[in-house]
Length: 401
Image (cartoon, rainbow, N blue to C red; front, side):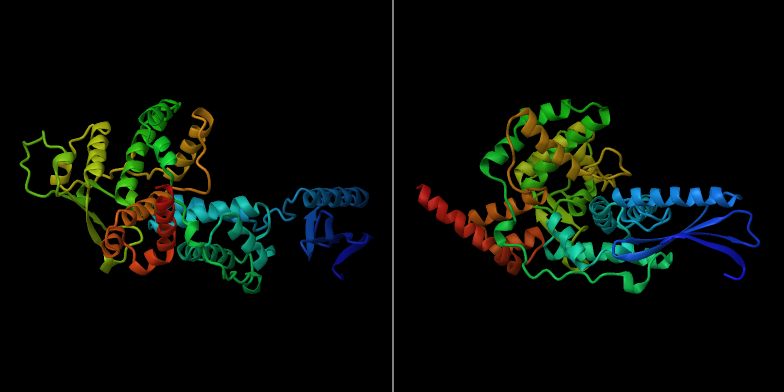
């Protein structure tokens, strides 16, 4: 180095001082995740011998970081760091509802890869991630791929990585088995919809907000069970104006309840619904009773809100913030296990209410075209995922007789 005083101390460790610099700088080369990493740091020392001591201190610190899987560079684009930035940006902006799904995937990526550098993983690593979180359905794979694409686009824009650092998204040849769409057993449902369990779960909440959320959660579960709506955006975007009454109800007839409105309909406009495939479905008595309960706990006149086409959301405490029902359901499952001695086996989620609803309708002999239309799916999709399951259930029913 013509313009600097350079001294190699040992292999991989050197110090140098630019003519215009006051301090000595440390130059260290290490092998990290199969790649050579070049670390340059100021020793903040003007004395050469002290700078050498500082170089060995930095070398030791880097080794400790490697042993504890901590990024070597202070500004390294790690999954923990990048996913935190992306989720913070999501919270600051009023994004489309789809971003809630990306938010979940970014959170999972941060948890799974942690302090690994974004440019250090390959296709095999991504496949392990998909397997850990059982991401196999077409929808999940698509949203995961898009979430990853946005993550890498951010890193490229910020010049943190280069194009060739981005791994190819793995191909999933073995799609989810039809039986993989788990449904709730009769025993599961008996414990889930036990009024005493709901009541105890609510009262176990330490904060008033938690207790309010758990009250709404009880109505939310019942509504999913009675309608087959998709958990997430489709059901959580419902507003009082989403319903239409069977006949004109005068404003002074406040004694009317939803339970008595036999022709109540629900317009589904949000979530996994294309513009041309929005649907209107009838609301059965049990679901109408849930609406009466919901109006009661929110201290509102639900009928009047429907008449006025009110913009308020059904399943929210704070109108500006959606409830994370995934977390609440996981808490409820833990409560059933720890406080009631009952464990819901398998990988059943809020989506299992939809799968259970569709299976239940098919078991009752409902026309598959009507079921498909009511649930916003296709007959081909129902055939693919549910025909085998209902055949097994029918066979078991015959054996029990």
